[in-house]
Image (cartoon, rainbow, N blue to C red; front, side):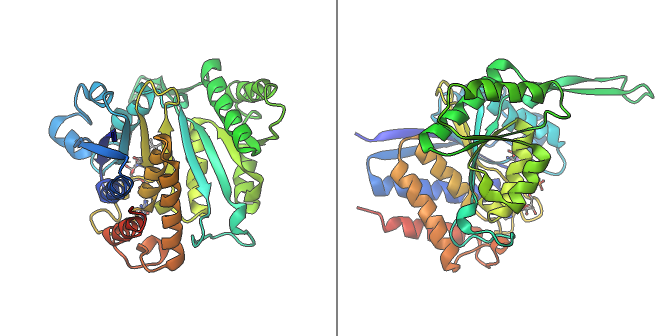
Length: 358
Ligand code: NAD
Ligand code: IPM
Ligand code: MN
């Protein structure tokens, strides 16, 4: 009997639908080549166009509709004409929060053949896995806007760091480091953020007592940014707060082939709710609709989805295929110096997957 994975597809805005289409084709090809599992994709037309028609980013009962799925595959959200804080909060961020996807796993790995702007850095030196806190912290959404438009105007944006929230993400990272026999680095900013980040550092130490076998490092975020560029091999598993993880993984993308190659998984590890897989880039309005978007980040996030469903062999094949494409340089989009279109790269992924058919 075939296992059916029910996937909610929210392709979203800009280049989202362009790259997700290629990821879906790759997943379908893997499933048909394997034969023991299949995907059932259901498309939701939510995003900025939907907002302009309906005054909301998703259906009113959107969250309860999504609950029925095994996973969500998301393209990108955001378009000129809709304020970003509305489009992102009412779709992407609300899903992360409502489904308690508190782990955001973002690999920063320089694949064979990927371009790297750093000098004197070997490919093997860039191989990190970011474990970004994804449910609270600087993204808690707590605050107020007082006396708007008056000279007394005051804006307050609170960071919320709960013991529960910090412990669970830090423990998740320790478990990963232990399982993979890697070092664990915490990135924070306790010298200036005298409540939240002092607390974070304290919990990193406390939880660490349960993992004496794991080698740890702790950096301030400013120094960590510098070392990511000057000496990236220092980092293996990295755990950090929501905002720092957001910023540092764009930096990570920049040193490992660019935004077109950066993937992320928003996980609810307990599997009480669907997890969500997405390229970490945005809707890229500057290149949307031109067939220029690199779909490989979407393919890599599809690989993360395969891993999550226990299809590790296929997950690795996806990465191998991305590497082959990067090394061969025949089918690359303009961001990687090529002239192939989004769908030509997708065709090549599918062609290479067919080689694995039984
Ligand atoms: P962006 O990631 O969309 O684009 C940054 C730069 O990277 C652009 O020059 C773009 O052309 C390039 N780029 C991104 N993805 C690419 C790909 N797959 N192939 C080739 N080039 C690619 O970031 P931005 O411009 O700051 O944001 C645009 C919109 O996307 C905003 O509305 C923002 O809020 C939103 N956003 C959404 C997400 C998300 O949905 N996960 C993430 C980041 C930004
Ligand atoms: C990301 C994005 C989002 C984030 C935005 C669009 C809210 O930048 O997934 O990296 O900051 O988490
Ligand atoms: Mn980001």
